[in-house]
Length: 231
Image 1: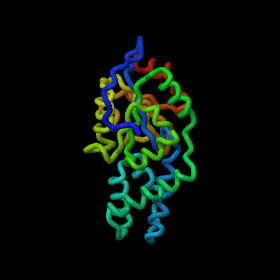
Image 2 (image 1 turned 60 degrees about the horizontal axis):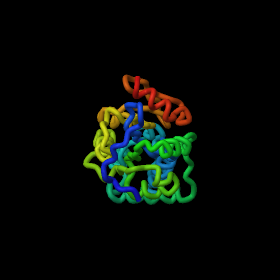
Image 3 (image 1 turned 120 degrees about the vertical axis):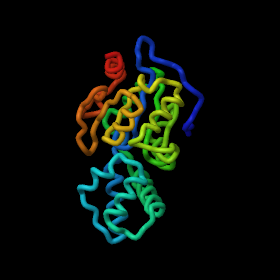
């Protein structure tokens, strides 16, 4: 598996200010944001609680500790954070073992970045055990490094994961393009000083300075990313 902190990579794309591409996982490369919610509903149903569908927007894209903690408090369920985290990860692994659909355009984008030797990192709030399972479908060769939510002092929406990825690649965060699908991930990338391309999966995201919003990953390619960075 790829290392969280490999030897620094200093390659850059000729003629472009773009130094690296940092990619979120759930909802960005793999169509799994719905999987997490389905598992949360199932786990809490077994505990005797019904989740309000409006809570989905609260827990999407965030770290496991935040999402699980919110649901425990909201439902009053008699379960510890550690116990719930284990149940949710177990349920999610079982789901992706049955099917792991990629988002439209994901395979094409990863292949393009790999063929053009653009330093690429996978940056997720999911735990290492989940990332390693998903990598078998995404192809570990596509990433110079991966950063898991349980391997940084603070995960998204804090900038730590993206700062760690940029440092591991030996690049300037301001010259990294980040692709995200949630407001939580966007906040993390922008706090790190990165250029952001948002492809919303569950809740809308508004455009902003150094933030471009697109309806699909199929609209994202290397030419597009070079253009954004140069502008």
